[in-house]
Amino acid sequence: MEKYSTNDSKNKSNNILLKKKKLANKIYLANTRYEIIKKVVSDSPDWVEAAYDSVDWDVVWVDTSISDDRFRKLKKYQKINHFIGMKGITRKDELCKNLKKMKQSFPQSYNFFPLTWLLPNELTNFKNYFKKKTGSKTFIVKLRNACQGKGMYLTKSLDNIHKYESCVIQKYIRKPLLLNDLKFDLRLYVLVTGCDPLRIFLHDDGLVRFSIEKYKIPKSKNLKHINMHLTNFSINKKSDKFENSLDPEDATVGHKRSWKVFLKKLKDDGLPMDLVMKRIEHLIVKTICSIQPELKHYYNSAHISDYSNSMCFEILGFDILLDYKLKPWLLEVNHSPSFGSGSLVDEKVKYAVIKDTLNLLYMNSKYRYMHIEEHYNLKKFRSKYNDIINKNKKQVKENLTISRFNFENKNLGGYKRLYPLKELLDYENLILFVSNSWNKSTGIPYTMKRDSFEYLFLNCIKEENMKEKQLSLTCGSVSEEEYDNENKDEVRTRKRNKCKNNRRYEKDQNEQEQSEQYQNEQEQSEQYQNEQEQSEQYQNEQEQSEQYQSEQEQSEQYQSEQEQYKRELEEENHTNQLQYNKENLLFQKCYSNEVNVNISNCSTSC
Image (tube, rainbow, N blue to C red; front, side, top):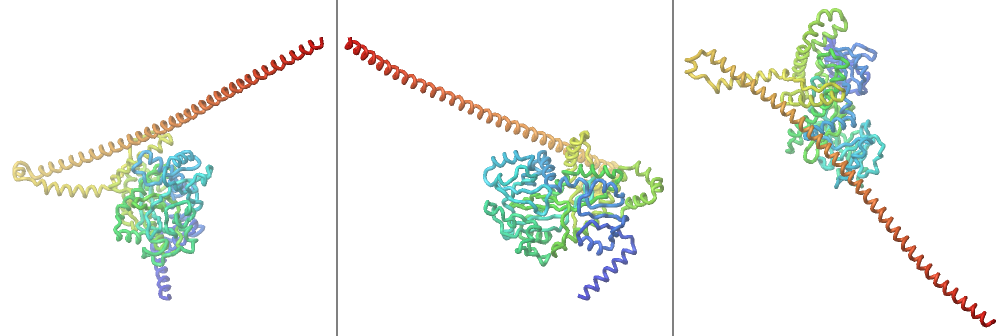
């Protein structure tokens, strides 16, 4: 133990010396409660923790969301670990709204989110679905602003749901992928370092969270067995059956395990996890693309002159569930995932995530030093740089984006870049669609111009073109007759021009295909909306016809009751008439008898 303590003390002293030799980046950690972040900073030679009352810092780490005013007051060389507008996917209700909007226009692309309803606004829609749905009816109810599994419960009945409760109802995934009869979900860490363009990274390590009780298909008897259906660590850790993993490299023991190790085990078991990971990556990019215009709007409204797009970064926790067909389902997105290190697995995974995040922040940018100079000597900065920046805004922005792109590719660590990628440039059309939807809601005119980031991949394109040239020269070699008739230079220039024309033609074709694809998507979205309107109109007509039929039935019933009442009255009148006639006859007989008796009495007396 003494050896280890002496080594630790030596390492700390070495780090302090290194930090003194060069200017270390200052990070303000007074607003975070997680000790593991402070540990990463103290172990790093590039970072030092700022004092509690200090104003001079480069990065601030906050556990809660930030306000517009706080972000606006930041200096251009400072960074904060949250974006304004990220609540569009981190709040359960906002995530539901945004993904449902996207699903209306792109139903095949956005089919990774369970059917969801917001109460009390969509109560009638939910009731209609509940009545029409046959077979299993199991739903999970979540409070809109709750976290850590608070207020969550399963139900099979409408009576258990309070109609005025502000909550989110999701269709429960009844057949999840199981391991040793236990249900599990994934907590994956996604880093966003920019919004224009989007910069999205996925860490190769995460957490696999298991339920405690063996899973059974939900029935009314086991709906209240929370430890069977929910995998939340904050709920399951309270149970006596919860088991911590003592070895982070062991993928078989514990109710919380390392995703990196667990993924390797699934691959060894023969599951096609490369395909599953591709689906998960696309799922993440599509989810964040749905709020890109909102992030860009809030960022530019506070710091429109920051061309580096580097003042914000955020680590998101994506909760994903795999079903028995290995289809990934997005459950929710956490804007401030817990960095508590209660176990060895937590410490290993979260330490790597935070360390790799700080290494990706691009703190040594020349543009950043320019802003530091601007802050301390405003007049000198304006005379030196202002005209250059104002005249060449686009070029400055592109150069900064390229330099940062290259820096990030060299310092990824455990992260993998998800966007922008050369093979995902088609997602620019998706972002354009979302931007136009955002513009429509805010009253900005519709635009067909998209932000293209092909210049980030110019080096790759040049290398590919060089390979194509070599292939064209080797395949279409110059014959002797051509050498005799023309000079070598002329032949080569002709070949190059031919290659250029071919590339231009291919580029034009690609642009035409992309525009046609976008138009097709627009037509599909319009067609889908028309179908939706027709279906709603059909439903309204059906309801009106049902209402008319019920009114007709009521009127017929009323008429039959009236007729029956008339019959009864007629029968009663008829019986009364007969009885009256009988009584009248009897009365007449009695009267005649009395008259006869009186006459006979008179005659006898006479």
